[in-house]
Structure formats: structure tokens, C-alpha cells
Length: 218
Image 1 (cartoon, rainbow, N blue to C red):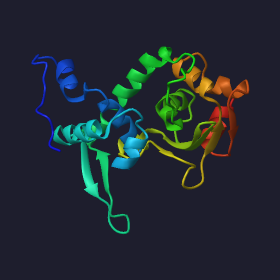
Image 2 (image 1 turned 60 degrees about the vertical axis):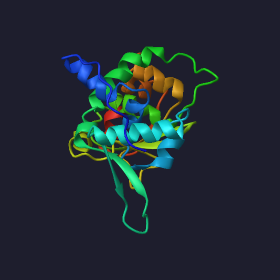
Image 3 (image 1 turned 60 degrees about the horizontal axis):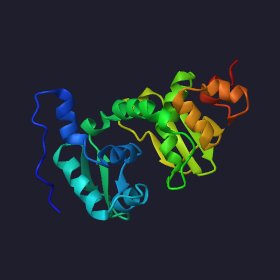
């Protein structure tokens, strides 16, 4: 499938130019998924419930054309194709963080039709960790919806490393958090800080790393 002809607002405005590239439905959510590192097409499709295969393929082609993502083949024994963000694509991280903060107020009670993946809370929790002073290390997060891990701190952001990943941390973690989706949403809305949530028992913390110690400080 070849990329669609580029559509444009034809306005000499930086916001309009940005929306020319990322304003289509699903594009920014694909970026959200690729912030976890290289992903196979099938993995992306599984974690973007509601997107059709044709639309996902089309958006990925558009993102390659616009320099937001690249496609490469993994070496054996993997031998699968994966998509990953370019430097330009990763530059959308603060855009997604700001958009998530702006939209956090819309996360009221979960609707029956709402899909959820545990790692969709990764970006709000990374911001909450920064605000709590837990600025370095690997943090494992356990929710009823699943487990994921975060790479807190500027190094992952600056060096192009994955910011989060599904499942337990691949090695020793600096902290493990246990909480529920309601608390995650409250953290995203700024109704409670992470250290306050730890102090009041809404978030459980284990571990002896710097991140765990920062969250347990009074």
C-alpha cells in the first residue's frame, strides 16, 4: 500500500503544518505505542483496538513518508519487520504529554465501550514520577489490567531508548508500584500527587532503589 497524497491545510502556520503531518485519526496514538520501542505491525494492531488493518497500514506508510517512523527487519532469529520512531517522531513526546494532561479531565468513570491497556497510563505516570522527584531508574507498575514498566528520567528520553514496555521489568527494578486505574486517572488529572498517594496508601511501593526512596520520603 502506497502512502496517500499528502493533504494540507495550506496555511503558513506552524500549528497547521504540524497537523498536516499528525492530525489524521490514529497517528498520534501510533506514536504513543512506538514510544515503547520497535513494534511489529501485529502488536500495534492488537494495542490499537478499533483501527482497521487498512487504516493502520496507511497511517504507518504516511508516517514513513513524513519522517516520523521507519520500518526495518530484525536480524535472525526474529526476522520480523518492526516499526520505530525517528528522532523527529520522538519529538512528539511533549506534544502527547501535553495532550494527555489537557484531556485528563475527560477521564471520568470508564464507559462499558472503553478499551484499556495497562501501558496507556505510562505517560501520565512518567510525568507523576518526575513531579515526585523519582527522576531515574526502572519502575515496574502493577494494575488489575496488567503489568508494565517505565524508564524514568531524562536519559531514556534524550538517548532515544524505549520509555516503557509491557510486562515486568526485564531486570532488577528500582521500584514497584501497585495501584488501580482510578488512581492513575486521578494522578493524570493532578487531583493527587504520587507521593501523597503513596503516603495515603492509594499506591503501594516496594523496592530499595532511588525511585522507591524518593516516593517514600515525607
